[in-house]
Length: 131
Length: 358
Image (cartoon, rainbow over all chains, first blue to last red):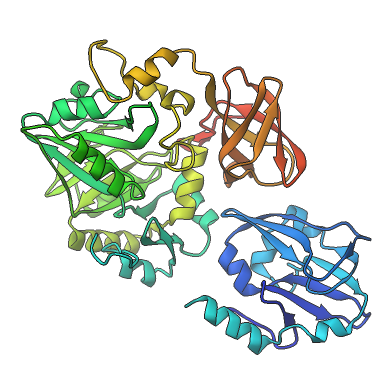
């Protein structure tokens, strides 16, 4: 059973987003996603300063098995990327909601986060995937 | 084979679930892709021992007075060179010289046993049927197969089944133990055996190996192990339109005797020793992962990655590529529009636990 913290917001494409106290939004991939991908070996992150629109391909995660696009859950400017993943991509498997985060965005409109899926709605999507 | 349309399950399905295998559809079979971490499973095979359920592969026995004549016509390698309990690797070619399948042929006390891919079962059975000869029969066998692979594989099996594998059994030789056929063969580049046996006995053997601490390994680890070992995957590195001479399989084509007629010979013989394409190994120097279909460019021209992944042993990405025959040295690979630096090398990358490249 995959973990889905209630404090996070989710997308149907298996990203999570968290509105931080400083107004930025941290983005990563869900426990369900990392489990489905298997061992992660490489992550291509966006450039800091890059303007990204919601739904854009913002990063690529490569597991041993396959490459998968990571989409921006909301629009914004990239303010930080998790450079630690360059040498330790396995953090995505080990701690998808913590050390395995991908990038932070300064949202154009923070209310966009509210429009994402809550944990229950995301759970329902994952359950449906398995049938 | 029955249940058309439904995924097939091997006799070890319950064991995979018990071992928390993540089951995926592979050529119509529900098979474990991993049991947690495919990288851990990979290392277990390279350094110690691991086991794979390969019961989904197709086992076809060929018997009768014309069994040898049939296989000498069907297989580009020459089965008449085999003594009983010896095996060879080879290709079934079509008339255009493309690879219908790659296979291992064992010569048994009577007749031959072919092990072909799971994904090609229907095609190969129909191919055999189209070329059947009088005084021969072929029949798919309802057997399970467990591949036990790694430096400790043989010792581990002998511990559970004392005397099953003679220590001096050579690579590509086979032995029998009770009603099992054990080949010193595999798809990992390590020492090991493949055991063909009845399903109920396979369950007991699997349980015994689990109890002895042997790591079950899934299709994921099987793919990275075979890639490091430079072994082709049918449907990816070779298919009906690729020549064995462009796929690092030239050594499996037995040209002598010159008067042996085999399927595809007329098509490939003019290219013998001067194939316009060849297979090379590729090591990615930049960060990223090589994948099938990426374009590789070098001074001699361009080609394509036929298999690519991450190599747990080398800690970087490796692949196999089909390139112009003069290709060598540095090259560039287009990964999502960015050109990454790579080197072409002779495969295999890893054999018997040793890194052979770089």
